[in-house]
Amino acid sequence: MAGGIIYFLLNKYFTMGTLIYIVLVLAVTIVGLFMHITAHTPNGESLSSGVRGLKIGLDIITGCAAAFLVPYFAEHSKIWG
Image 1 (cartoon, rainbow, N blue to C red):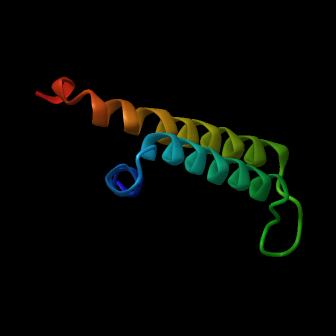
Image 2 (image 1 turned 180 degrees about the vertical axis):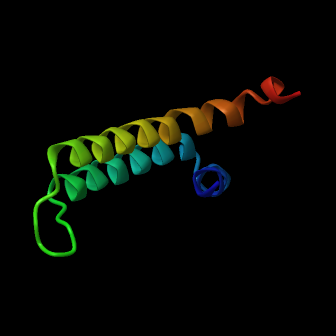
């Protein structure tokens, strides 16, 4: 929902709003990946590789979906009706 709101505002106020949105979401996704690569548990131990891999995979899937599906569904409104 937040991605849709950000996409709407960027499209409303910028001529290349879709491109700006895609670049912004991909940049946030990459920052999130680096945060999960260096993540630690609350007691200071390093995360296990399984948990780290799961979080990184979810970040990639969510970031790509937000970056490409939000603009696609916004531009193809006939899909919904």
